[in-house]
Amino acid sequence: MDKLISVIVPVYNVEKFLDKCISSIVNQTYKNLEIILIDDGSTDESVQICDKWQEKDNRVRLTHKENTGVSDTRNIGLEKTTGEYICFVDSDDYIEPDYIENLYKSLTENNADIASCGHIAEAYSNSVILFSNSNFVADTEETLKRLFLRNDVFPVLWGKLYKKELFDGIRFPDGKIHEDIATVYKVLAKSKITTHIDKPGYHYIQRHGSIMHKEFSKERLIVIDFLEELLEFIEKEYPNLMEYAEEFFIRQLNRHVILCKENKMKADCKNIKIKLREYIPRILKNKKMTFYFKARSVFLAYLY
Image 1: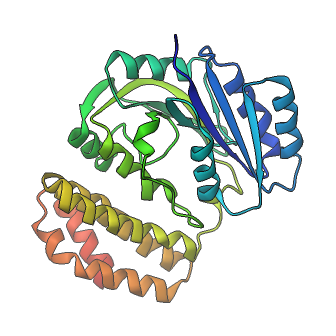
Image 2 (image 1 turned 120 degrees about the vertical axis):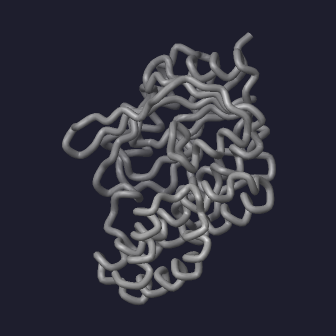
């Protein structure tokens, strides 16, 4: 018998997208699902849409809570799951009809702990970008390496099916954004085998007004703290990957120097440049970084 899979969907003011999202989950070819909708204090018609689906399909379970953010909402979802496997779907996204079936088949056939797949990013202009490369099966170290190389494995929760046990002892940081960055690498590190299928099954909607597409602000700088925690983790647990992890981290420092300056956040820009300078000796020694990347990092740290 197919194992029960829990689908966690945080919901907050997404009335224009929610019906399509839930419909895509309810109509999966894989039927043994529990669909956990967590309303994070929505003020639009999202609640009514959730109510409609709960009445229509007995696999749908709705929970209401005060608005405390997506991290706390996902944590509540984890506490309410009873399935052996978990996947996350953002409420403004949607999935292909065979998305869960394909992930489950790939995971079980390869005796893996996580299965991931390609995804489709739908931008404001209705352009469609495919992120997909090749099928692979990888151990923990290779999976983390692919994450740092941005090659098939992305630091996001969606687009993956997980064994529930991987989240034992792991929760999302309450009240923070970039919770994916803070959490996904920890889950990947607990996975002995990760499998990837190149067929894109997840539609990631890049919409105006979403958390990651709002105007750049100070709260988004928390990602730097999370990435430094990642570096410390890799240095301790996977020292062979340290140069890959450093390149991943420095790329984000460089990006945020530019973002802070473009958004006239002078004090924050200065602080990130100071942090970047602290890493210059390690940048210059890093064999995984190109000469251009090193030169650009030095320029951003001292001259930009």
